[in-house]
Image (cartoon, rainbow, N blue to C red):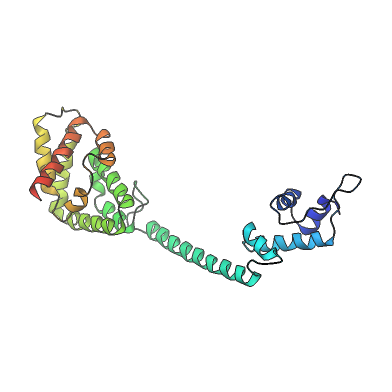
Length: 251
């Protein structure tokens, strides 16, 4: 058989046959006097086995182990490992689908900052009216970022603390007032008297249980520096003053 005939018989491409030659899975016959390689039944048997093994999901290195005449893993061992790996993948897929289902079925739908955790999505849905404020929209983006970047325990504490705070109507009203103060600084200078007022009001809005998560941030680090650069100068100064107030008052 020529290479095209071999490929057709086994149901693979000639490119696949050449690749199996290249990686050492399929013996390559010598060329005959006419310049062509002639494949025999043994080549077809081995190639068919390679196809069956790869269709089961084995990688080429695992196929090599199975085909090896001497040491290496036998077929039962390789297939057992493959079955265990597929079981882990199956569990991971079920978990991901569960998370997707929770997001799609969340009350209020997906937030603009999504996907986020169902808990944070519910929190955003309950404070959707605050997104009318440009500063509130930036705040939501930062909260979504922090939920992704923080370790699990810190992330859960952050969302829990935010939920406890914004679950109270009076706290939401105060947050609305603070966002309005910060929005008003969009065209102000950093030394504007309103900067100090906004910083004080914002510091008063942040409860002690939430500050430890904020306080863990490097006040001069890349994350906050990037956040400041995304704000107007007076707004960035108000945030810096807020963090200084919280650091000094809650030591």
